[in-house]
Length: 199
View 1: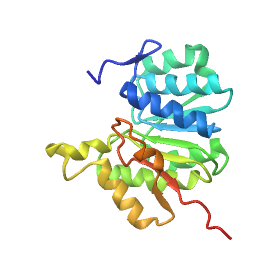
View 2: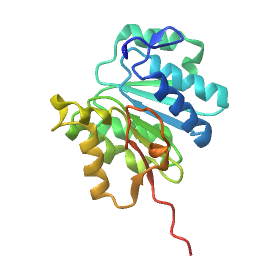
View 3: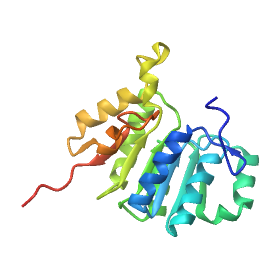
View 4: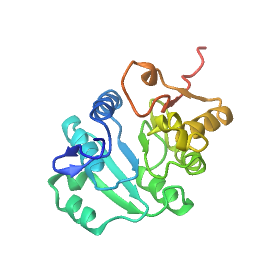
């Protein structure tokens, strides 16, 4: 059933519960940029752009390894297309990371949603690449950490990448948002920088 949700007619590969969680995060953060890796059929990018429109702030940068021309055409023709920038290529490739950094103009309270290749090494590379763009209240959301519960992916999944990242980056932690009691495919997958130490 997870394949069937649609947002304004386009398939979105998130559970309805995770879509609600994302809109709550966006309403609190009001990020200037939302960076999405893994566009698939475009519904996620359109959902994020819809939230930006409702909040009156924000642009979406959506990355896909091999973007579908039909999906690109549908998003560019949509009324919310003005809030979406589409980039194609490996989300962890240095040239694409540099392009994203150029577009956002540096670090800030951005929201980064990692939902492309779920291999441990790739997610780890994405975390290293995009964490520098998140400062202050910015968040990293690692999707499908729940794959760790499946025997087939027990040795290679995003949850392992999160553990690797946190062990190497002590200034980051699992956000309290991740323990808020939501049913989510991103269990332990919402990350944030530690707040500054009190003077």
